[in-house]
Image (cartoon, rainbow, N blue to C red; front, top):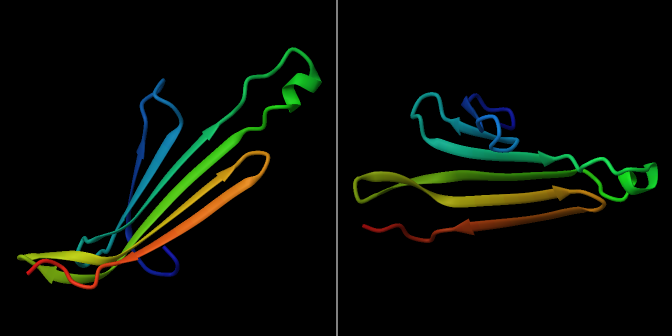
Length: 107
């Protein structure tokens, strides 16, 4: 994750459950969950002709969430910042990003 050392766990869906890949990232010293990445690709069915095959592009989706600014709250350490990025590639690429920050965590 962007130049920092982390532990990475990978999960792949069972055969027949789709092409989902999930990557979970943890700090090596605290084991805090600092990021998740979800990836899926969907190849389109081949058409009966070249023209019909080229109409439907393959679709690639990726959702990435990162957690930071960890603070103590009610006996736990929780992230006060959460960023989520969504990207879908097909004929056009769609991208959005949300950044959320908690001003206070429960006491």
